[in-house]
Length: 270
Length: 43
Image (tube, rainbow over all chains, first blue to last red; front, side, top):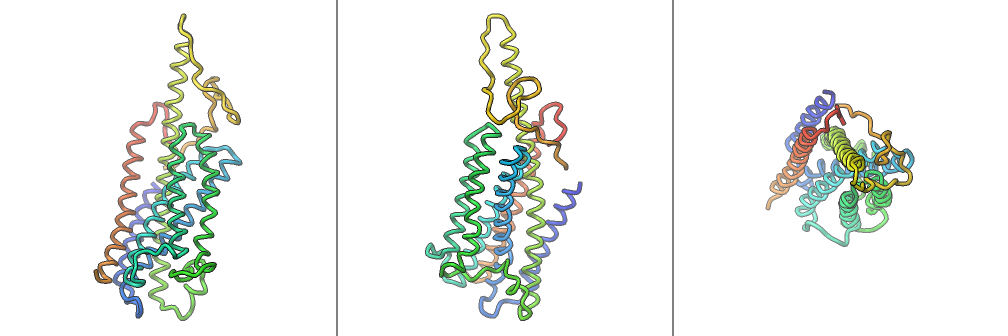
Protein backbone atom coordinates (compact mmCIF):
# COMPACT_ATOMS: atom_id res chain seq x y z
CA UNK A 1 0.00 0.00 0.00
CA UNK A 2 2.82 2.40 0.91
CA UNK A 3 4.54 1.57 -2.38
CA UNK A 4 1.31 2.34 -4.23
CA UNK A 5 1.05 5.73 -2.52
CA UNK A 6 4.70 6.39 -3.37
CA UNK A 7 3.97 5.51 -7.01
CA UNK A 8 1.05 7.94 -7.21
CA UNK A 9 3.11 10.66 -5.51
CA UNK A 10 6.00 10.06 -7.94
CA UNK A 11 3.66 10.20 -10.94
CA UNK A 12 2.10 13.49 -9.80
CA UNK A 13 5.52 14.95 -8.98
CA UNK A 14 6.94 14.05 -12.40
CA UNK A 15 3.90 15.53 -14.17
CA UNK A 16 4.13 18.73 -12.10
CA UNK A 17 7.88 19.04 -12.64
CA UNK A 18 7.51 18.46 -16.39
CA UNK A 19 4.74 21.06 -16.69
CA UNK A 20 6.80 23.57 -14.71
CA UNK A 21 9.87 22.88 -16.85
CA UNK A 22 7.85 23.31 -20.03
CA UNK A 23 5.55 26.21 -19.12
CA UNK A 24 6.61 27.72 -15.77
CA UNK A 25 10.18 28.66 -16.67
CA UNK A 26 11.01 31.38 -19.20
CA UNK A 27 13.16 30.50 -22.20
CA UNK A 28 16.88 30.91 -21.59
CA UNK A 29 18.45 34.08 -22.99
CA UNK A 30 21.18 32.18 -24.86
CA UNK A 31 19.81 28.67 -25.35
CA UNK A 32 16.16 29.49 -25.90
CA UNK A 33 13.64 26.68 -25.36
CA UNK A 34 16.32 24.00 -25.69
CA UNK A 35 17.35 24.82 -22.11
CA UNK A 36 14.12 23.12 -20.91
CA UNK A 37 15.57 19.72 -21.83
CA UNK A 38 18.31 20.23 -19.24
CA UNK A 39 15.94 19.52 -16.34
CA UNK A 40 15.04 15.90 -17.16
CA UNK A 41 18.51 15.35 -18.68
CA UNK A 42 20.38 16.33 -15.51
CA UNK A 43 17.90 14.45 -13.31
CA UNK A 44 18.32 11.29 -15.42
CA UNK A 45 22.12 11.57 -15.26
CA UNK A 46 22.02 11.95 -11.46
CA UNK A 47 19.87 8.83 -11.14
CA UNK A 48 22.18 6.88 -13.43
CA UNK A 49 25.06 7.65 -11.04
CA UNK A 50 22.92 6.78 -8.03
CA UNK A 51 21.73 3.51 -9.56
CA UNK A 52 25.19 2.23 -10.40
CA UNK A 53 26.50 3.37 -7.03
CA UNK A 54 23.76 1.33 -5.35
CA UNK A 55 24.61 -1.64 -7.59
CA UNK A 56 28.25 -1.47 -6.50
CA UNK A 57 27.35 -1.17 -2.80
CA UNK A 58 24.87 -4.04 -3.04
CA UNK A 59 27.56 -6.11 -4.78
CA UNK A 60 29.88 -5.49 -1.83
CA UNK A 61 27.01 -6.49 0.46
CA UNK A 62 26.62 -9.80 -1.39
CA UNK A 63 30.37 -10.53 -1.34
CA UNK A 64 30.51 -9.94 2.43
CA UNK A 65 27.17 -11.33 3.65
CA UNK A 66 26.26 -13.90 0.95
CA UNK A 67 22.63 -12.81 1.20
CA UNK A 68 20.74 -12.89 -2.10
CA UNK A 69 18.68 -9.87 -1.10
CA UNK A 70 21.78 -7.76 -1.85
CA UNK A 71 21.98 -9.30 -5.31
CA UNK A 72 18.29 -8.53 -5.89
CA UNK A 73 18.98 -4.87 -5.04
CA UNK A 74 22.03 -4.89 -7.34
CA UNK A 75 20.19 -6.20 -10.40
CA UNK A 76 17.19 -3.95 -9.76
CA UNK A 77 19.37 -0.88 -9.52
CA UNK A 78 21.50 -1.82 -12.54
CA UNK A 79 18.49 -2.28 -14.81
CA UNK A 80 17.01 1.05 -13.73
CA UNK A 81 20.43 2.66 -14.13
CA UNK A 82 20.62 1.48 -17.73
CA UNK A 83 17.21 3.05 -18.34
CA UNK A 84 18.22 6.40 -16.83
CA UNK A 85 21.58 6.42 -18.62
CA UNK A 86 19.84 5.87 -21.96
CA UNK A 87 17.32 8.62 -21.14
CA UNK A 88 20.13 11.00 -20.08
CA UNK A 89 21.95 10.35 -23.36
CA UNK A 90 18.77 10.92 -25.36
CA UNK A 91 18.00 14.17 -23.51
CA UNK A 92 21.57 15.33 -23.99
CA UNK A 93 21.38 14.67 -27.72
CA UNK A 94 18.10 16.56 -28.06
CA UNK A 95 19.68 19.51 -26.24
CA UNK A 96 23.02 19.31 -28.08
CA UNK A 97 21.65 19.51 -31.62
CA UNK A 98 20.13 23.01 -31.32
CA UNK A 99 22.83 24.33 -28.94
CA UNK A 100 26.05 22.69 -30.19
CA UNK A 101 24.90 21.99 -33.73
CA UNK A 102 25.56 18.25 -33.42
CA UNK A 103 23.76 15.37 -31.73
CA UNK A 104 26.95 13.65 -30.67
CA UNK A 105 30.69 14.07 -30.72
CA UNK A 106 32.93 11.11 -29.95
CA UNK A 107 35.85 13.40 -29.10
CA UNK A 108 33.96 14.74 -26.09
CA UNK A 109 35.10 12.86 -22.96
CA UNK A 110 31.78 13.22 -21.08
CA UNK A 111 29.78 11.80 -23.96
CA UNK A 112 32.18 8.96 -24.67
CA UNK A 113 32.57 7.88 -21.03
CA UNK A 114 28.78 7.99 -20.60
CA UNK A 115 28.34 5.76 -23.66
CA UNK A 116 30.93 3.44 -22.10
CA UNK A 117 28.96 3.47 -18.83
CA UNK A 118 25.84 2.38 -20.68
CA UNK A 119 27.74 -0.39 -22.48
CA UNK A 120 29.29 -1.61 -19.21
CA UNK A 121 25.95 -2.02 -17.45
CA UNK A 122 24.22 -3.54 -20.46
CA UNK A 123 27.11 -6.02 -20.30
CA UNK A 124 26.46 -6.47 -16.57
CA UNK A 125 22.83 -7.41 -17.28
CA UNK A 126 23.84 -9.76 -20.10
CA UNK A 127 26.46 -11.42 -17.90
CA UNK A 128 23.77 -12.24 -15.35
CA UNK A 129 21.97 -14.32 -17.96
CA UNK A 130 24.95 -16.62 -18.44
CA UNK A 131 24.40 -18.57 -15.22
CA UNK A 132 21.28 -19.94 -13.53
CA UNK A 133 23.14 -20.62 -10.30
CA UNK A 134 22.08 -17.68 -8.08
CA UNK A 135 25.26 -17.64 -5.98
CA UNK A 136 27.68 -17.87 -8.90
CA UNK A 137 25.68 -15.28 -10.84
CA UNK A 138 25.64 -12.91 -7.88
CA UNK A 139 29.39 -13.20 -7.33
CA UNK A 140 30.27 -12.61 -10.97
CA UNK A 141 27.83 -9.70 -11.18
CA UNK A 142 29.16 -8.15 -7.97
CA UNK A 143 32.73 -8.17 -9.31
CA UNK A 144 31.67 -6.71 -12.67
CA UNK A 145 29.47 -4.14 -10.91
CA UNK A 146 32.41 -3.00 -8.81
CA UNK A 147 34.77 -2.76 -11.78
CA UNK A 148 32.17 -0.91 -13.87
CA UNK A 149 31.56 1.57 -11.03
CA UNK A 150 35.07 2.93 -11.62
CA UNK A 151 33.58 4.68 -14.66
CA UNK A 152 31.15 6.74 -12.52
CA UNK A 153 33.73 9.23 -11.17
CA UNK A 154 35.45 9.22 -14.58
CA UNK A 155 32.17 10.32 -16.21
CA UNK A 156 31.59 12.95 -13.56
CA UNK A 157 35.06 14.46 -13.54
CA UNK A 158 35.72 14.02 -17.28
CA UNK A 159 34.55 17.60 -17.90
CA UNK A 160 37.14 18.84 -15.40
CA UNK A 161 40.02 16.54 -16.34
CA UNK A 162 39.75 16.91 -20.12
CA UNK A 163 38.62 19.53 -22.57
CA UNK A 164 35.47 18.93 -24.59
CA UNK A 165 32.15 20.41 -25.65
CA UNK A 166 30.31 19.52 -22.44
CA UNK A 167 30.01 22.17 -19.73
CA UNK A 168 31.30 21.59 -16.15
CA UNK A 169 29.21 19.43 -13.79
CA UNK A 170 25.76 20.74 -12.88
CA UNK A 171 25.05 18.73 -9.78
CA UNK A 172 27.37 18.06 -6.89
CA UNK A 173 28.24 21.72 -7.58
CA UNK A 174 25.86 23.56 -5.23
CA UNK A 175 27.93 26.72 -5.61
CA UNK A 176 26.67 26.83 -9.19
CA UNK A 177 23.10 25.52 -8.86
CA UNK A 178 22.29 27.46 -5.71
CA UNK A 179 24.35 30.54 -6.54
CA UNK A 180 22.47 33.72 -5.48
CA UNK A 181 22.65 35.03 -9.05
CA UNK A 182 20.92 31.93 -10.48
CA UNK A 183 17.35 32.83 -11.54
CA UNK A 184 14.92 31.25 -9.06
CA UNK A 185 12.58 29.63 -11.64
CA UNK A 186 15.54 27.79 -13.22
CA UNK A 187 16.74 26.57 -9.82
CA UNK A 188 13.21 25.49 -8.83
CA UNK A 189 12.71 23.65 -12.13
CA UNK A 190 15.99 21.76 -11.75
CA UNK A 191 15.59 20.92 -8.06
CA UNK A 192 11.92 20.01 -8.62
CA UNK A 193 12.80 17.66 -11.48
CA UNK A 194 15.61 16.09 -9.44
CA UNK A 195 13.18 15.46 -6.57
CA UNK A 196 10.39 14.12 -8.79
CA UNK A 197 12.71 11.78 -10.70
CA UNK A 198 14.27 10.57 -7.46
CA UNK A 199 10.80 9.69 -6.15
CA UNK A 200 10.08 7.81 -9.38
CA UNK A 201 13.45 6.03 -9.11
CA UNK A 202 12.65 4.94 -5.55
CA UNK A 203 9.32 3.47 -6.62
CA UNK A 204 10.90 1.72 -9.63
CA UNK A 205 13.66 0.29 -7.43
CA UNK A 206 11.18 -1.14 -4.92
CA UNK A 207 9.07 -2.75 -7.67
CA UNK A 208 12.10 -4.10 -9.56
CA UNK A 209 13.47 -5.50 -6.30
CA UNK A 210 10.17 -7.27 -5.69
CA UNK A 211 10.38 -8.72 -9.20
CA UNK A 212 13.95 -9.93 -8.59
CA UNK A 213 12.85 -11.62 -5.36
CA UNK A 214 9.89 -13.27 -7.10
CA UNK A 215 12.19 -14.56 -9.86
CA UNK A 216 14.56 -15.96 -7.25
CA UNK A 217 11.70 -17.70 -5.47
CA UNK A 218 10.56 -19.28 -8.75
CA UNK A 219 14.08 -20.43 -9.59
CA UNK A 220 14.32 -21.87 -6.11
CA UNK A 221 11.02 -23.73 -6.53
CA UNK A 222 12.09 -25.14 -9.90
CA UNK A 223 15.35 -26.41 -8.42
CA UNK A 224 13.47 -27.90 -5.44
CA UNK A 225 11.15 -29.75 -7.84
CA UNK A 226 14.11 -31.18 -9.75
CA UNK A 227 15.68 -32.39 -6.52
CA UNK A 228 12.45 -34.08 -5.40
CA UNK A 229 12.09 -35.78 -8.79
CA UNK A 230 15.70 -36.99 -8.65
CA UNK A 231 15.17 -38.28 -5.10
CA UNK A 232 11.99 -40.12 -6.12
CA UNK A 233 13.80 -41.68 -9.07
CA UNK A 234 16.63 -42.80 -6.78
CA UNK A 235 14.13 -44.44 -4.41
CA UNK A 236 12.67 -46.58 -7.21
CA UNK A 237 14.38 -49.96 -7.49
CA UNK A 238 16.53 -50.45 -10.57
CA UNK A 239 16.82 -46.74 -11.34
CA UNK A 240 20.21 -45.18 -10.98
CA UNK A 241 19.78 -41.59 -9.89
CA UNK A 242 22.04 -38.85 -11.09
CA UNK A 243 23.07 -36.39 -8.45
CA UNK A 244 20.71 -33.42 -8.74
CA UNK A 245 23.44 -30.92 -8.12
CA UNK A 246 27.02 -31.02 -7.08
CA UNK A 247 27.83 -29.42 -3.78
CA UNK A 248 29.14 -25.95 -4.33
CA UNK A 249 31.78 -24.47 -2.11
CA UNK A 250 30.66 -21.62 0.07
CA UNK A 251 27.00 -22.57 0.13
CA UNK A 252 25.23 -24.14 3.08
CA UNK A 253 23.33 -27.35 2.37
CA UNK A 254 19.55 -27.13 2.39
CA UNK A 255 17.59 -28.64 5.27
CA UNK A 256 16.46 -31.68 3.30
CA UNK A 257 20.01 -32.48 2.26
CA UNK A 258 19.23 -31.62 -1.35
CA UNK A 259 20.67 -28.87 -3.49
CA UNK A 260 22.88 -26.50 -1.54
CA UNK A 261 21.12 -23.17 -1.28
CA UNK A 262 22.29 -19.65 -0.57
CA UNK A 263 20.55 -17.92 2.30
CA UNK A 264 16.85 -17.90 1.57
CA UNK A 265 15.49 -14.42 0.93
CA UNK A 266 13.08 -13.16 3.56
CA UNK A 267 9.59 -12.10 2.61
CA UNK A 268 9.39 -8.87 0.64
CA UNK A 269 7.13 -6.07 1.68
CA UNK A 270 4.42 -4.86 -0.64
CA UNK B 1 13.48 20.99 -36.65
CA UNK B 2 12.87 23.93 -34.33
CA UNK B 3 14.01 24.14 -30.70
CA UNK B 4 10.47 23.32 -29.63
CA UNK B 5 10.58 20.16 -31.71
CA UNK B 6 13.71 19.01 -29.87
CA UNK B 7 12.10 19.88 -26.53
CA UNK B 8 9.05 17.78 -27.41
CA UNK B 9 11.25 14.91 -28.60
CA UNK B 10 13.37 15.16 -25.43
CA UNK B 11 10.50 15.25 -22.96
CA UNK B 12 8.42 12.79 -24.97
CA UNK B 13 11.03 10.06 -25.04
CA UNK B 14 12.21 10.59 -21.44
CA UNK B 15 8.74 10.69 -19.87
CA UNK B 16 7.38 8.11 -22.30
CA UNK B 17 10.34 5.83 -21.63
CA UNK B 18 9.83 6.09 -17.89
CA UNK B 19 6.11 5.38 -18.22
CA UNK B 20 6.70 2.44 -20.58
CA UNK B 21 9.32 0.91 -18.27
CA UNK B 22 7.04 1.34 -15.24
CA UNK B 23 4.13 -0.31 -17.07
CA UNK B 24 6.33 -3.16 -18.29
CA UNK B 25 7.71 -3.64 -14.80
CA UNK B 26 4.22 -3.95 -13.31
CA UNK B 27 3.27 -6.45 -16.03
CA UNK B 28 6.39 -8.55 -15.35
CA UNK B 29 5.69 -8.44 -11.62
CA UNK B 30 2.05 -9.49 -12.10
CA UNK B 31 3.09 -12.36 -14.40
CA UNK B 32 5.75 -13.53 -11.95
CA UNK B 33 3.25 -13.49 -9.09
CA UNK B 34 0.82 -15.58 -11.14
CA UNK B 35 3.48 -18.27 -11.34
CA UNK B 36 4.22 -18.05 -7.63
CA UNK B 37 5.04 -21.51 -6.31
CA UNK B 38 2.51 -23.12 -3.92
CA UNK B 39 3.20 -22.23 -0.31
CA UNK B 40 5.11 -19.09 -1.25
CA UNK B 41 3.29 -16.06 0.14
CA UNK B 42 5.40 -13.24 -1.11
CA UNK B 43 8.79 -12.34 -2.46
